[in-house]
Image (cartoon, rainbow, N blue to C red; front, top):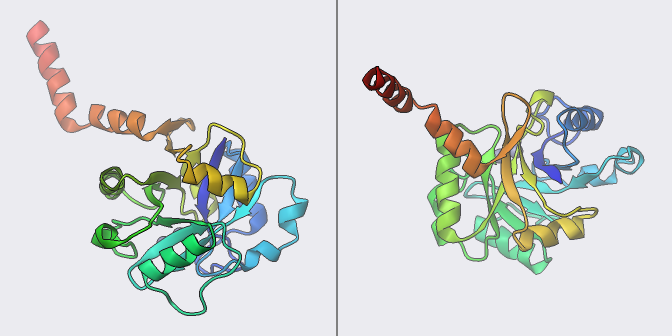
Length: 230
Ligand SMILES: [Zn+2]
Ligand SMILES: [Zn+2]
């Protein structure tokens, strides 16, 4: 089951140009099985009647601007009444049996937790594939996630239709509620995936292999191989 765990809609994320209807239409177009709306510092979209009427699974998480950088969370019904530090937010999420995740931690123009990751206690996951990041920023997140032994997630960070599902998270088993989503994440039964130019999805390992194959050095080597075989 493919879910984009990081999507913004326009009612409660002013930076997005997508309505909920646009999000669902794009998600279906790109072959996703569900989406999770993660508006900035707001869970208010959960009260929208469209979510229950649409007949397509739309979960509601959140992207909170902590003092050290952006964090995603799943399984919350309320938010802190103040701007928390990353550690305060992690503790808040843990006390409500939710799942906390560093969003785009190494985005070069800021907004991520960056090197703070090493100092945090109780963080559950790291978004290692973010649709708004470049390959190096995602690679750095992947390395940090592996080093810390946390759960790796993927999300489009979509603010417009073509970015829905640019990155996503694959679950081997069906996820039908936020409770099940949080449980699957906590168990680490998921893998980050990225949509390729042909519309198919690849997991990180396949994707990084494809990247290596396409570096100028590998083309050079291929050229040499051809040269020497003549
Ligand atoms: Zn963000
Ligand atoms: Zn975002």
